[in-house]
Amino acid sequence: MKGRLRVKNKIYCEVCRTAFLHRDEVSPGQVVVCTVCGAELEITAIEPEVKASRLEQDPETEIYRRAESYARLRGYTFNEDKELVLEGLVEKHRMFGDFYCPCKFDHIPENICPCLETRMNEVRKMGRCY
Ligand SMILES: [Zn+2]
Image 1 (cartoon, protein in one colour):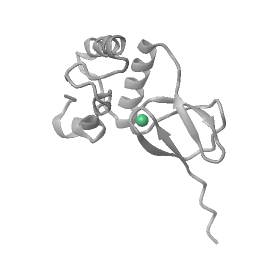
Image 2 (tube, rainbow, N blue to C red):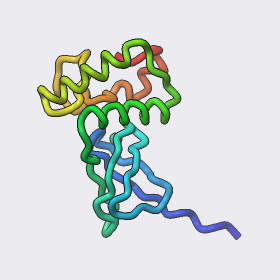
Image 3 (cartoon, rainbow, N blue to C red):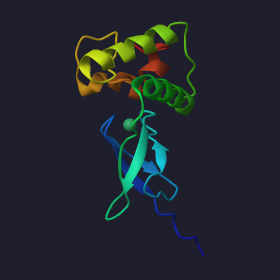
Image 4 (cartoon, rainbow, N blue to C red):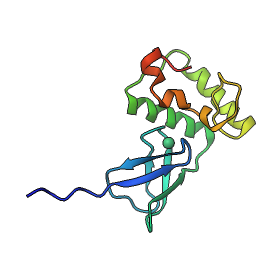
């Protein structure tokens, strides 16, 4: 007899605006990492469906942790521009309210780090992010 399939939680990430599957049980207040973009999310509700919102933390901590998580999830390493890019992201957050790519001009959700191209495996194809 086959074992019962484990219930999977589908969690919507408000950073990359996609839903990802979280295999383990979650409870309110728990922090989970979005497997698509590396953002840290706090579980705010589990009934009737699992809801999560962006974990509140200072911008510098948030983007450093997101970048580290994302790199770990994808098996990427940082290049010599890491500090420069992260500083640029913090600056963008200060000026425009979110971590828009410092290498791009448009302040649109698709350009929030990690940007859509990067989430779509651009790094694997091009060897580095934009
Ligand atoms: Zn996400």
